[in-house]
Amino acid sequence: MTHQIEYLLSELQAHTDMFAQLQILFPQVKAVAEEMRATLQRGGKILIMGNGGSAADSQHIAAEIVGRYKKERRGLAAIALTTDSSILTSVGNDYGYDYIFARQIEGLCRPEDLVIGITTSGNSKNVVNAIIEANEIGATTVGLTGGTGGKLLELCKFNLVMPSNDTPRIQEAHIFIGHSLCGLLEAD
Image (cartoon, rainbow, N blue to C red; front, side, top):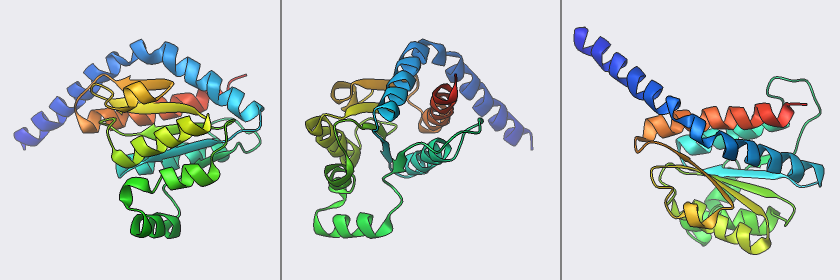
């Protein structure tokens, strides 16, 4: 039993240590929130994608934007590109898994939109391909990454790199940043 408590204390300490470093990202988070607001004001939409836990985060953040985070308001335009099983499986089958998001960006994204790619490494091929496609279209691109930022560091207009190499810590920070963006988006 003592080993389990020690494990939990160690995980909590790692979480706390990493979260204490997130303040360095706050100016960038503010800039991304302002860009999200400008995107919606000009009639654009927010497109979000990721794999695994990052897919779940994409859906979570899109739901907060379309529904509401904390403040009662009108629905805002956001789409998680992770939710349509028919598109994901048909594109995966016909073009390959590396293109499941890029093909959706090609069909759905416009220059007035903002595209968020969530990947702990910054190197997920399907997210990288989609960001490249979004850049070609002229959309604003945002990466939520960790470690070094990976390939998205050079590809995105904004790249919020979580100060950790530990996937669970990066994912915990991603949802905090996602919630923070939603809160700033709703702020008067």
